[in-house]
Length: 116
Image 1 (tube, rainbow, N blue to C red):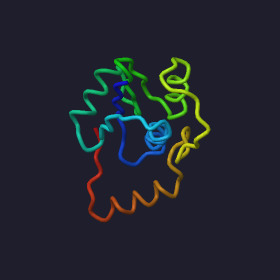
Image 2 (tube, rainbow, N blue to C red):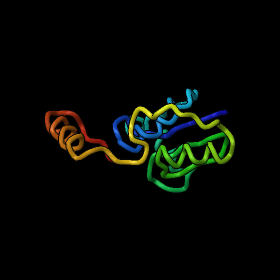
Image 3 (tube, one colour):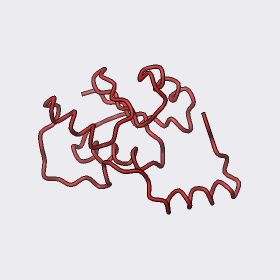
Image 4 (tube, rainbow, N blue to C red):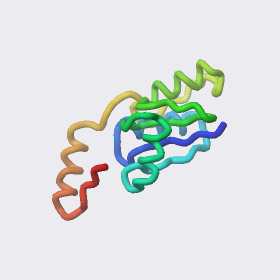
């Protein structure tokens, strides 16, 4: 299976997608759309929209999805077999408010904020 995951480095939804990939021990390309504007542009072109995460599995683009939705897609298409293994992070939630506040503090201390 060829998997490209267009993800943010620090994002609850992106961490959920990573947790699903790890849960099923899948090899995948973790593509950083925040620090690489070309990857962001590629994601928008392929998905037809600007929201992330987006996951491309064997040429099929799943746009603006949670880890839970990626898992459901793979299970229903028999790309993975069901497992009792737990995901290492929530698979259907944003970052908690505390994480956003911490990142805002870090950005105010000199780290540039990037908006595409």
